[in-house]
Length: 104
Image (cartoon, rainbow, N blue to C red):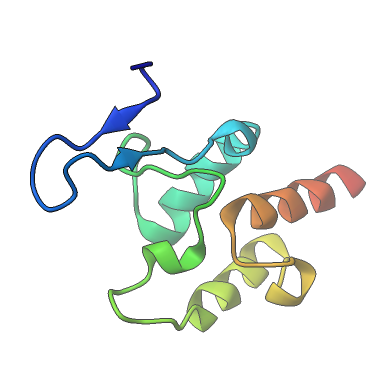
């Protein structure tokens, strides 16, 4: 079994394989991600785990699907709105923020 081939050994999911989502794209935005996670969710580096699949909804209150307040703040701080990105995935948000910074 390779180190990337993690299997659950006990419980109701015993034998199931765990596949961790890639962090390849999110790594491109390490500094921005650190600023963003601290500013919007009050996390310090090392207090959160995000991947290329991470979404704003992953950081909202359990059972909530309302990200409108977060988007108001993102728009105020970075000038990026939900209409500017194709989804609420953090990599898409970070890509647009970076694109706008590079244009200026």
